[in-house]
Figure 1 (tube, one colour):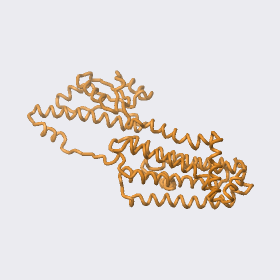
Figure 2: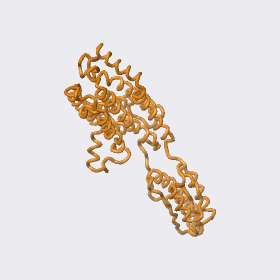
Figure 3: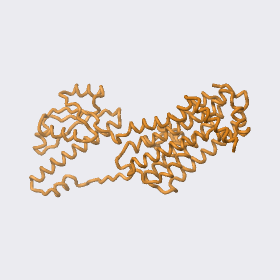
Length: 389
């Protein structure tokens, strides 16, 4: 144990002296987490700009514009006079949708005829388009039902009978999890663990790789009484403890800040996050042991972990991806942690439902750490492996 603590003290002393590694290991992760939280702090997209081309210029068209503008996700930023101006506003991204109210709209409606409104959407931005489309349709459906009810009541039907006539079949949609829906729960709370995975791998490669790069591997091993296992565990422990503390802060914040969205066990999700972090560090250990080259291992760690969120199935359905993408997702610790996040923390699924994800993370940790340890023990302390930058 004295050798273990002596070796850990050597690593801590390096962190106090090297400001670059200190920024990487201590300050970068909380700064990035705060940035991500701030970006998605609104919860939902609000006041997305759209334009209206009112060719009718009637009391009804103006009422419809006011209803659309009153929606929380929509803002009527421009009222245009011709279709060319509408097309230019879309191309210049001044607005992301244009609603066209055709000439004669009010007259046809009050004559009992139907009328079509044209909604042009910029679908290059799917979140913008879906939010605007949902808000506009909801406002226009409300207006349409109100007009229809008024028309039927004038014919002598009661309000209840009129509503049944207008909407004979209705869908009652009940969101079960992330009822908001909140982008903090959907994106911010899932992007931050992706940062944990990236930083866990980078600091692991950096901590071990610099010993090989600078030719100090033998001195590092000597502080741990010659034991490679002791040298590795004592070097990586400070980083794991620091990441574990940040992980605890992450879980506590979301559990306290958005309590209605999280019905599962905060303790279980924290322990699962620690397992994911440990698995990511083990993969990084294997990379540096395989390459014995600081720059190459760092590049591979970035290639492996940086796009992990895109392959995880959180933003795009995993089952809709090609087979290779699904295989790639299966070897990423983040993918399996996100299953635990969605199943247990959001949906309060029983432990049996997340047991498979736990098993995969544990197997990933054991296999990669064992392979990395054996490779590092066999070749990394050979002077021929030193100096590769």
